[in-house]
Length: 410
Image 1 (cartoon, rainbow, N blue to C red):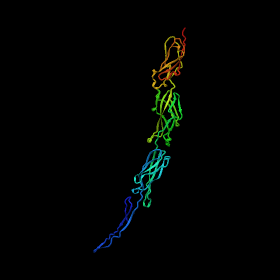
Image 2: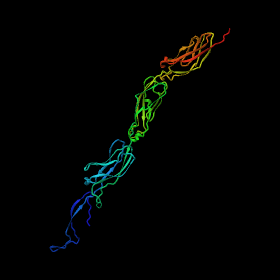
Image 3: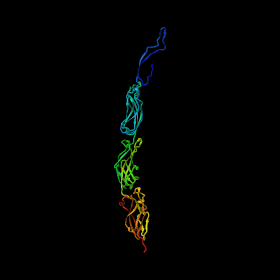
């Protein structure tokens, strides 16, 4: 029995000669040898046939952001048809198992071998077009085109390996365009509804996960500015809402007027993972026309005083009460010396020798009656000051002072 072990990955043809000798030996008798211990030599050819080795590779997992269109990524490295003597073989991928999130791909992914045989490293690539986030698992084998004689031990297919392709949705910012660059309102007129104010609404992209998002609209008070007028932006809006159709419902707080730059942050619920962006800022001008509001106050229904027989000044505190300066910009409130009540009309001035005069901010009234005079006087008042706009255009507030006759002794 002839036993031998070829070197690894070596093959070819060789000629062998075998000499067979026994242990009996030969003897020398006289001048010659007697006996024979070697047979005729045997010559034969040994042919070591090459065996097709399986291709090799190493699969790697992939984690990628969602992108539009076709994407090519490497999923296998150290790709080879086999040992160097098999470098000329053609290799290809065969899919032995596949699963993916429903609706993840536009078409089934395609596997390919990248590189030139015999020149540098080969790699495995997957080509796909993802339309949504998800996870796909591939079980693949590498197949060569070498011989496939099982009795010789040929193996033209690698062991199967599994790799994962995970697609992360990258959230894109939502946006909209104001229907108009400037929204015009009138002071103290309540809420205004503007249909379709938020036009060209985009939730970030055409992908399904973007289209399913919910948008919210919030005024960024820190970015809102007063462009003209004395009012600050703090407390400017008593109500602000944009619905899913883009309809705006806006209410400006009482007494505010001027021109303001309103900045709205539109946000979605897609998150910011993997570098996503979930909001953007949109600005528009809000112009609120003035209607000449003025401070308000309460007054007694009627001030009743008896007639007098002599001259003496009289004072009544809290004649006017609950003075409300909400129509005055906050920067000017509390400057008491800048405001005063002015009597613009007196229906019966003959009742008085002096006054009546109304003080601010106490609301007290003082006057001196004419002796023995009695009757009624309707007093029309205006509150004037640096921020009471165009007081002449306002209807005065009327209060009544009645002097009751007193029966004097004869």
